[in-house]
Image 1 (cartoon, one colour):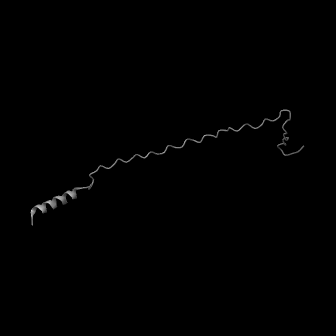
Image 2: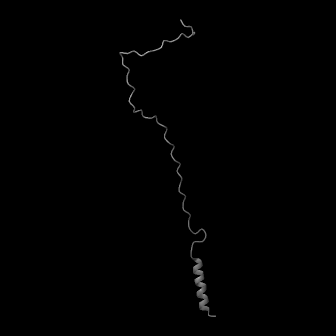
Image 3: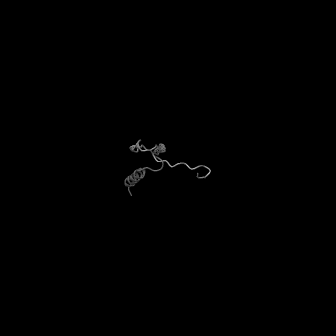
Length: 75
């Protein structure tokens, strides 16, 4: 058998075996830092944009029930 084809086949096999990444030849990527979400801002009171209640007519007094005595007697 000729030595040239054997040497050529061995060289081709070695070259093909050397192709590709094997083992830790590539540096791993740095992990992306995980940012914690900022806490939600404190709940702000709702903006009251509704109009104020209609004013009572000063000519008609408001009806107020008389207070009962604290001791419960009616008199």
